[in-house]
Amino acid sequence: KKSMIMGVKFEVVKYDEPYDAKTVYGYPVRWGKSVNMEAVTHNVLAPLINKIGVGAFKTLDAFDFSIEHLSLYERRLGVMSMTGELKDRTVKAIVDNLAEREMQIRKSALRGDYKLNPRAQKFVDDTIVLMPFYGVAVGTGHSVVSTRFKYLNLTFWSHYRVFPHIGVVVGTEEDLAFVKTCGVPWAEIVNVIGQIDMPKNMGVASGVAAAQKFRSGAWDKYEYMYWTESDQVLVIREDAVEPLYELVSDGQHLVVPHRLLPFPRSSDFDPSLAHLLKNSGGNKKELKDNDEKQYHAVVRTAEVERPLEAASCCFDPGDCTRRDHWVHFSDNDKMCMMRFGDTMGVVNGEANIFLHTWRTCKFSETREECPRAY
Picture: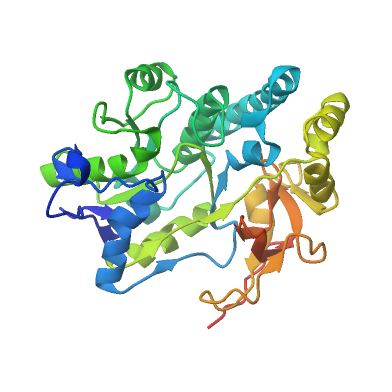
């Protein structure tokens, strides 16, 4: 049986000696100060990419395959540093919005809105979606505990619309108890309790644990693995599923989604809370800059039943190894915000969030064939 992450055979990077004498499932893992949730990419996937000499494919149209990284919304507002009434009201507003979206996405998943052709269905039936979750025991990173519960459920149901087998990795007894009672039908619950030092180690721990599952034969029924995080809503068109798998079916390539980032707008909140956020919450510039952007909403209506099928956002065909075609967020001619279906408002592109520079996609109200760069 092949053990794969979206087509690449999954092997554990083994070190001569354990680093700080720490192992996960018996495998030495190099824990460093910079080992964060995303480090699984570098510790496990990067050596494979270097070994076989390939990079990753992304789609030309953002709406074919993307994720919406929910927790950045809180980070933009600075929720973790808020206190008192401001924090309580802001968190409640976010949780209420997430609850409504969860209900909509869950209904879509249970209705079976996605209709895949037989070949695409076989691909997804052979796939395990895996996400680490560290949320109940402590609030870490850029999100508070109460929103993490909603993020997890939203992430699950957005993937369940397409993928029938979804697993979660947990590292505390509290999280284990939560995922068993949160009301979603997990295909796999992977336990790494006692094998990590810090919450941010969950990414690498989940990757190593998955490798152990494949190597031991416990996951022989899966041919592919899609690794994500527990705050990433999946955006994918049903007619993109088969072509994406065709790209990775040779076992030599990766396909990864675009990372779309939700930014807050004044209209996300009732007027009194928006006023409070601007004046007491230090978000005046944040909301002003976002409010000034053009806002495109493609939502389900009587005329538009499937929003993702009705519009496009084509990325510029610039060289991926250069950044001279990226633009700053302040460029209101090229930067906009958009909402398709039941998402928050996201920015039209992918970012170096520290420099606030973006590779943009151009929004179109009608679906287009995106121009190729080569």
